[in-house]
Image 1 (tube, rainbow, N blue to C red):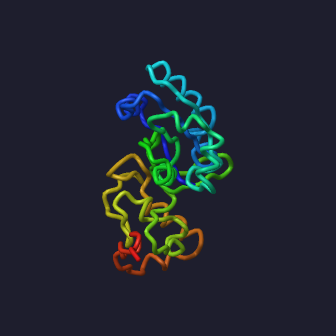
Image 2: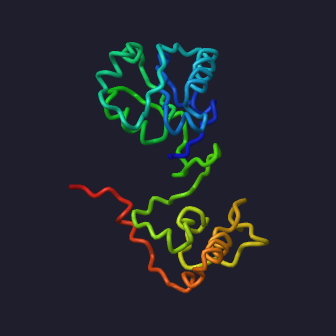
Image 3: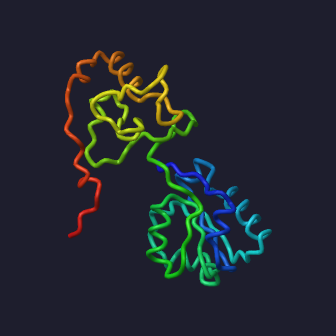
Length: 207
């Protein structure tokens, strides 16, 4: 699941130079995080109307990043053609897909943060660094690329204090990796030395 959070409303207003706006929410990741489902879309609609915008319509697509037919979206939402711009409450993937078909200005209402998931109704963030070369099993299922603030692959930096990262408020990923490997009886994995990631694998190669 793509982890996103809603931008500050004032920042959204600063982006939106147009008056006539159509709002699109996402029924997948953004809905689960309560950042772009129907309640949030309706709340955004009210805020924008209070700010003087004319909302030509709104919808929540089943998945903003996976659209079978843009023609179907248009036929079911005539307000899109009446709008000067679209405000999309989804991850960057959804915004990009819609931008490719809409033929008009599209604005993101959310900031995409990481690839995470949901377990027992709890959203867990920063679970995958999307490096294109997954070796997470070597780290007890904890991705150091995203969980470590410095993306270190071969052990802790030594800057953590009482298990807290020196960069920000997160717990030291390498403390967690050590404890997980210990539980699994795989502490020998820490002795492996890993080459730097090939960052070419994270890039989309042109045909």
